[in-house]
Image (cartoon, rainbow, N blue to C red; front, side, top):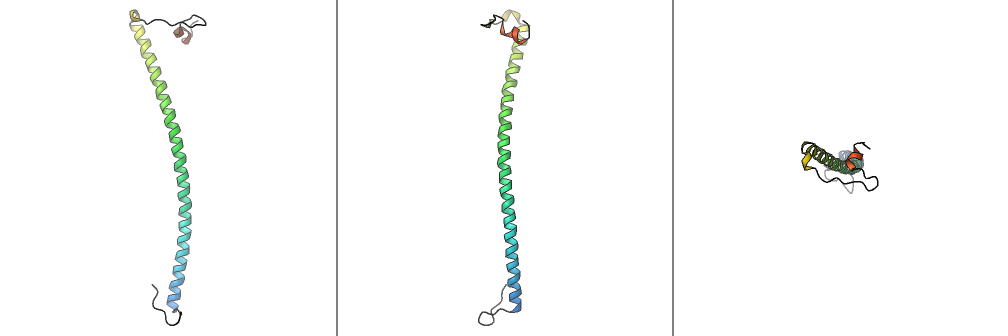
Length: 109
């Protein structure tokens, strides 16, 4: 720390040296603060970007889960119809071609 002042505003050589060291330290800390502030801004942008990407991937996953559930349900229904033919459900015909929809989907015309 700075020692007492000798006379009207004069500093000793040791005090001048300490003052210069402290000034250099302040300059160095300003540079470090600026660098860290820039890094923080970049990290904030990256976190925001990754958050948006994560939200998109979650939406895609949700849609895939819905599609998978539909496919599994349809597959179960088809298996049940094959194993229990007497419990068939009414066939819904297409208005345009009068071909049952399940026949169209399987490629039979």
